[in-house]
Length: 208
Image (cartoon, rainbow, N blue to C red; front, side):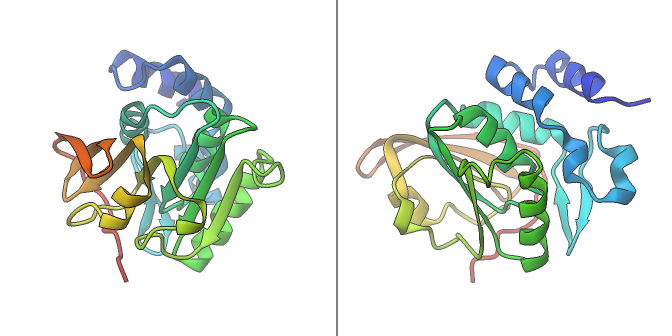
């Protein structure tokens, strides 16, 4: 029988989950609370699962890998593009704490409602730790900018310029570009340092 504990152990053993803050978040935020009812028995498998509308809840390995790269910290303000099931938004909210904030965007109305329902199980929306917006953040969200961190679950052809502009100096962006994961550190007003990690598969970012 697969369990949350066995999944976390697998991710730690594989070197995908290292940060103690992230490990604690994975322990507290149960993936089973973010998958459709008929897939609850598969919640702890290390694989993506469909959540409808041609979208998935990402493979735990990929989520762990991207969050390790993002390196979220207490009190940070994070833009989460493509909330989907709400799992990543909730993991981030657990880490940034009461004085931090996660702004989660989901462009598909039904999934926006699904993510709100799931995130609410942990009272993050009620406490103001997560704000969920039903819309497309591909053009940014100036009202709450700048952000300490930006993460996207959907793959673009390139990093949207507006996201670079809305990132704080000293901030970090993690997103898929094609089948690679890109990490962008903003080291000056228009200066960035970039790293790429190869060999992943994501749903496309819809930019209009």
